[in-house]
Image (cartoon, rainbow, N blue to C red; front, side, top):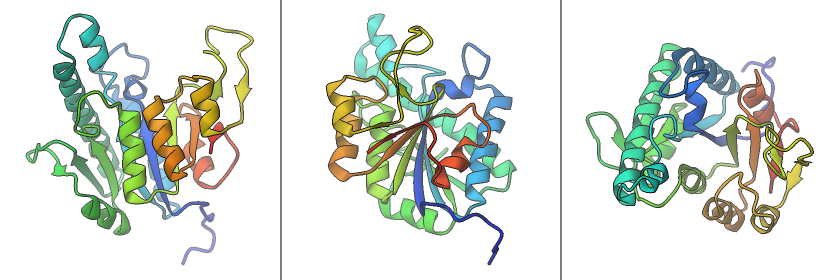
Length: 241
């Protein structure tokens, strides 16, 4: 036993990473140095000995709602978005495994040539064996966001905390990049998010977390070491509980 290793505050954590986070300074697609930076943060968290799941969005490649706004059938657009999350998941898997982190991609839609089918008990077993599980293809259904998929997977695998990794250092009353006097909220209740109509997560996602009492911490992933701080129980970002 490594007595010098810090003691994490959680045993099992699910991290939601936005697809846009993988773009880095690019305007589209997957920026490899940024993926490497994100995976180094994940590797630091794994070094604490916790069980870890990831959900990644697909907004760096395609958004179903954007397609619908341009006349595309919404279901078709969401299906394309699900495939985008699979591509992002494979990119994360490859980088993590280069770092020595055993990883499994599990897809909510059948795509066995690239990923295992999502089976809850198998996912939990992977995590118990120390493998990082990346949950791809959202919920497998149109009209549901990857935030909702993350909340659902957090519930199913018994995560003690969900982390929403964004490009803002927590939740504000308005977009702090556009509104100079936007108010920062260090803590919020689930009902605060719903009644104030804060846009940090969609209402379905928050409602699932509320009903199952899973706290979520919203952080700025661009800050070095931020994931490790969260897992060690430090008070960073915004806590919704």
